[in-house]
Image 1: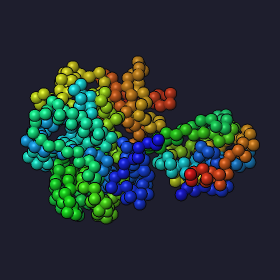
Image 2: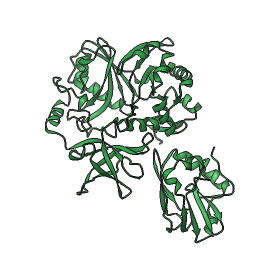
Image 3: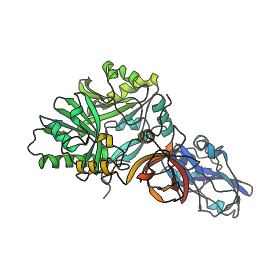
Image 4: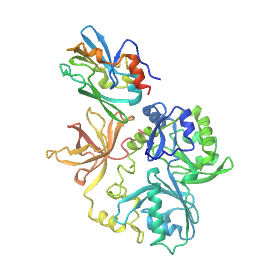
Length: 127
Length: 374
């Protein structure tokens, strides 16, 4: 069973969003890291990049496959988790903590309401 | 109408009980991993892993002309084998295109076993039967597709011999590429010192009804020697590091053994065998493309099948394509196999791999791509 913290919002493309004031921290869910298995490479958006919700903004690659990373909300990237470049496996070990991906300054806070609640996301991944 | 149901090996329930992640492979439902591809990979390099390879096919040939018949169909020379010895070989079309790669064992004076790829069992058997019923009608032999009755597993890694010793004292004296016919639980079992990982190890073939007992016995014996169940994911990273070809990737009906770098398994001194004209011509005149191993030399995403390969020199021309690629757990960088124009196939040649519209530096390396330090 995968862990789905109740204080986060989720995108159907398996990213999680933690809102902190006018910014949000983004990563991928425990379910996503389990499905991908051992991560081997992560390409994050650049600091300063302007993202629109739904944009393909990066890539996560496991030993086996490559998957696109999608922006769950719109805004400007203000910080990225550089440590993942050399230690992508951190995402497998701690997807909601040290395995965070990037921080974004929200340009449209209303989009948060469009994201999935933990309950909705749990329903999606348990089908 | 749904897809045809996937076939399951006699170890299916065992994989489910072990919480293996099951995926489709060559028409079979097989475990891709149990815990993690990387962990299973390292277990095989450092201790041992146990793989279900029951999906592979087994063909038996017996009779005074069995050797003659197989020597017409296969590229390697069976007359070099003593009873109890095996060799890597290829089954090819008349034009030299590869139908399958396989292991051929001489079990007795006039008895032979071929172990073939899961995804090729039906195609191989149809081809072999067609040859038997046309060109080689007068030869005296019996042949059987025994794939459905047999289960197989691969015990691979440096502690394999110590594990197997607990079950078959004599098996550990087997030399590389040798096969022994022994008994397990009252049923016959074939044990060969072969594998697909680049490590020491064994492949064990028994009847379906003895598969679970054999798996459990090996698992119990291996507990203190670092043995873990290993899935197809690790099997693929291990064989890629070892530089071994996989049918459907490095080998297809559009490639020849010479292009694939398997000329050593083509015995061109043999008289008249299928594909010979092409092999001789290619060995004499050379080939326009060759299979290579390569590794990424800078930071990049792992290379993947079908990514394009470009020259690393000033020309920057497209020179080929990746056929297998992954992140190497042993080397910590991207590695792969692919085909390039012959001029770029020498080890040390700089090349570039195109990954999502950007080119990243790589280098042609001799196979095996990963070799354990002595």
